[in-house]
Image: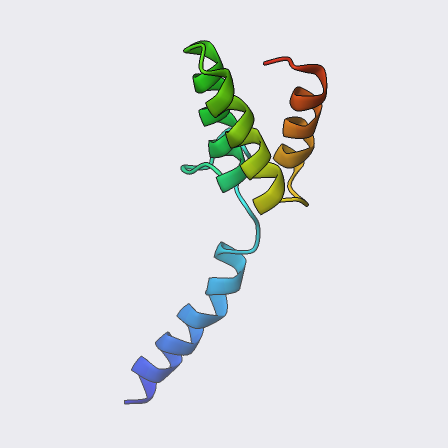
Length: 83
């Protein structure tokens, strides 16, 4: 009984070391919500749907105001550019 308990403690002690940091942007297996919305807005722009492009960027800014993607969305709206 003592060995399984010690093994459990040893495994649990390693968990914080395994999960201590976020993966790099290029290697993570998911998009952040702001990133996904920015990509969606760009897809709308490429399809020529300016209204959906603008609404998606405005939604991104309103929903995730502190996101770095919100800052990019504001810049795009300000310049009217998809870049």
